[in-house]
Amino acid sequence: MSKGTAIVTGGAGTLGLAISEALKNDGWSVIILDRQEALANFQPPEGIRADALDITDFEACRAYLAKLPELSVLVNNAGIARLAQVRDISLEDWRQVLEVNLTAPLVLTQLATDLLVRSGRGAIVNIASIAGIRAGFGRVAYGASKAGIIQLTRQTAMEYAPLGVRCNAVAPGPVNSSLVRAKLSKEDFDEYLEDIPANRMAEPEEVANAVAYLASEKALYITGQCLAVDGGFLSAGAGIKKAQQLKP
Ligand SMILES: NC(=O)c1ccc[n+]([C@@H]2O[C@H](COP(=O)([O-])OP(=O)(O)OC[C@H]3O[C@@H](n4cnc5c(N)ncnc54)[C@H](O)[C@@H]3O)[C@@H](O)[C@H]2O)c1
Figure 1 (cartoon, protein in one colour):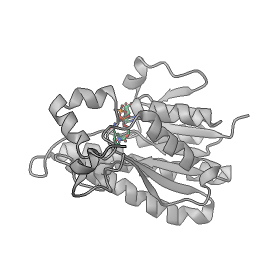
Figure 2 (tube, protein in one colour):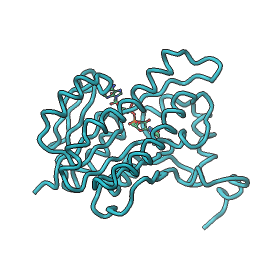
Figure 3 (cartoon, rainbow, N blue to C red):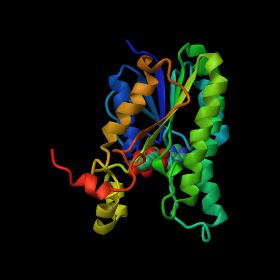
């Protein structure tokens, strides 16, 4: 029997799909929400429903959630990146990134509140990024949006705990996906690995497991947290190259 309904925005993407599968394996009835274009050539795994919804179309989001009979878990995963430095970023790119990565999760949280409260053990998991905690070259809009969602998480946690709804964030480091590999040259990819004590990128399933845990009843007393899934990237400091050369 299903534990309840879980929504994963951007569920047709690399991380969203892994998160959807992890939640399904945990017994949730999963609904993927993604843009029409993303769903055109996407076959959802068996047992997972996929509906077209642009999360920046707030009226469509309102209509969609108004029709949903039940909701226990909301995973705000959909995200976009526009790489540009502080001095160059266009207002259009800044606004687009903030709209998808920060404003839409706020609106979806607002629209889902009554359903999550009614479910009795509602949980929200926001997908942030290490870029919301440490600066990364060219990530002004992306980093600001992810820092914003970490604070939105804390704020929601505080105000929703009395309502019986938890809210946490997961901050992945770089994920081993074809997209990341396609974006980074071999040189940049290897340079990135040098900053990660684990000396590798995360597998999508490793991020998904953290999301499934935070959504689950095992994490009932955890709220307002941002869990980094980053192979030690945020903790590391001086001497990381020496540390990486240590042998078992
Ligand atoms: N891949 C990484 O290395 C990495 C690292 C840290 C954080 N993240 C975060 O993880 C999340 C997922 O990233 P990913 O790597 O799977 O990216 P992805 O591009 O594979 O997936 C993102 C999904 O979001 C959807 N989306 C974008 N705009 C939307 C909109 N307006 N309405 C509905 N859906 C929309 C896209 O169609 C896509 O399916 C993002 O929030 C991203 O910032 C990714």
